[in-house]
Image (tube, rainbow, N blue to C red; front, side, top):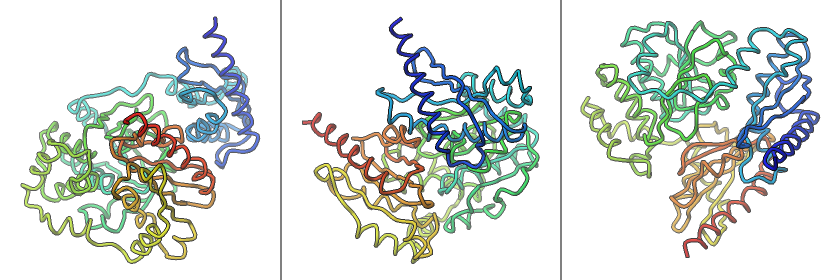
Length: 450
């Protein structure tokens, strides 16, 4: 009874706080007029099922529900400020069952409802992933916003693999353009930006990402009527109703794609090896990062045996930077600050900086490493502004702090040594809240080691 009573109290508190957030207005144009009807907790208090009534026509209701689902991470972080719990429950939005009956919401709500209530992603073997790919007719390949070398290289490698097993209806789409340093990768020009209408496909493949949050507008195309396959190496689970292969022991998603070639019995030609080698060297920092392992070197040897020009590839990826990026580096170094007795270093880049310099997202890549690569620093942080009132946080850590765990409560994720989060809050407020918490955590870790 005591546990049940606590669940009721937590549910009511979550209901009140979400109602307040909705009254203030969630910054998502898709969300219309919504009322929170009830909240139920899972027995272990890990999940909070939020039942909402949705108003407007069928299209508006569907838009509101999708917007709420995509805002769940942000809502969880905001609610977590007022919960006295060690772990904030995951927030899951569902249309209210009673109003479903009253208003006869379209069938897609029932499909979404069932998908959200289903068990976690079904984990498949590499051979089973290949079987799923072979059974698809038309496929959409996509990856996260602000793509890095692993995202682009893995996407292109998957495209070739699908073509090699007889799939000629393959659409490669990214919400952001291919970064300049990766435009020379074979096939990069065939990656398209989202158009006004989604292409025809029955199966979506998420590469180097296991959730919808960073897909942005592309996520709207992947409805409950589509099969969803996830291929990723980050910490985390895939969405319910999907199948996939997620293994953080791989240093890069590109390494998983190499293994998929093996499982499919397809040889890797030189142009594909180029793409997958770039995927690997960017996520391992040219084999300098802690995620590098013996398998990484074996895979690298296999790719190099196709005749790749290592010096040319590494030079293009690591040794050349734009003058705009050089100016950003200068500002990051000038603003560097330290805390936690030198265990923490941080800097920041404002929206005004990028606008004045004319820098783009890719010019920010790797800048956080300058905060981490300092003697005595355990964790480095870089704060930047993708847009006014929004803050992106990048963390790099050694084996003392798990960066992904730390940022989980902010809706972020990634790896233990490298993680990020985008927060709908001005930079000064994010820094004012997060930096003291980082210092406290690092000092606690240091005290425990003494």
